[in-house]
Image (cartoon, rainbow, N blue to C red; front, side, top):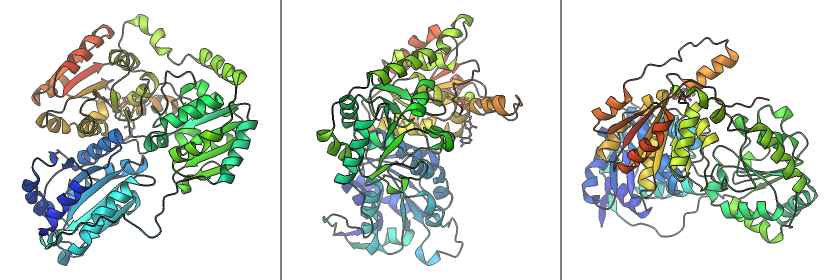
Length: 549
Ligand SMILES: Cc1ncc(C[n+]2csc(CCOP(=O)(O)OP(=O)(O)O)c2C)c(N)n1
Ligand SMILES: [Mg+2]
């Protein structure tokens, strides 16, 4: 049967298991939008309000489900509006496929209306990209895009399809053979020698520590991690994106490391004699000064991306492989160990530090603070919600005060730190996980960057709860001004609209919370409404706990 390029795009999406596409139309992608009528009922298209939102929704969907998220846009400004979302996905290894229309192939290079070289622009921010100017290349490009996005170290892939290709027709013959790409062979296993060398270090260690990152969640290695930790009695520290890799209620789970991590966890890293880094990449927010980072430890690093090994931190054993596969290789040969003294030492540091102190010392003032809001949201949701954050202090308070028991229940922009991520990513997450309670936790600043997506949430009646932590400031920046710029608050006090009225303008219920007592009822009310809800938490300004080296 002959199909147009436009129809082939949708056929390929269906064959890749895509059930929702987040997008925005325009001239160069219009043939594809026109063909959408044929696919009604098979696949849902969500009309976003800005193409950045489409990419964050695809990203949120991907992080929530482990499946590939899909965003679609037109050429030129539509495509360039995707750049921030693509970079966000790239930095956090999130598998998305972005499909953009391009001007007709004969106009490419002529500065045609809405022409931009989006494959050139996105070269450094995609795992791979394709420009399709011949309909015979369309099916291979679509199949390769999904294969590349989801295999190995996942990441964003862009397919730019010229308008004449969307209009052309060919016989639709969808290949079933597995995709082979020369030079692309994601590593899977550890060698026996690597396992033996690592086992030697594990048996000798007195103060071992596992650093668990995003890779644990992405490769689905939570059970293997827990078995490894319990068998060898090795405590586990989490990166921000590693939250959920191990239940935070588990006695061997210490919580978050790094700049906004717990002091005891960072002290454990500095004191350890063996670091086992699983699916993490020694980001500077985790290590601080590399010259003084964990100076007395031997190091074993397992990561799917060989280029991460010895990139920031030199390691004794570097294993390029899929974390779940490699941990499965270790488990049958792991010795049963005890590290009572070491664990006892860490417990003492934890008691000294009492990371939840803010909840006690300012309680008397009767004021509402962000830490209260997040802590009480954690209690009210029984720690069981999928939380999608924006970027800033509220993000770090979430990481400190909302304890996660399950993988993929914290979705946050770690690597790029993209303000404006929270609301659209939460909408995407809810599409992926319709049966989960989803909370977006956003700041007054970041929310205003993408709040146009409230209209998307309203039009689609997405059941997402939006908690705005309104401290009247670009709080995280103000905090840096306090630390390093002698309290000169240039460009950080921020006026906001009346968020309750704003929600109402979109036909969304808005709830205002000004005291701690109101939180449980507000959360219950928001969750009882089948559709989007905005809860504004009016909080006093506070500094978020920070660790400096
Ligand atoms: C797109 C973008 N622009 C600027 C920044 C720098 N930045 C990081 S946190 C922050 C303040 C965020 O303010 P708000 O959203 O109110 O959250 P709060 O820190 O107050 O909780 C800024 C401006 C950023 N991360 N992303
Ligand atoms: Mg703020």
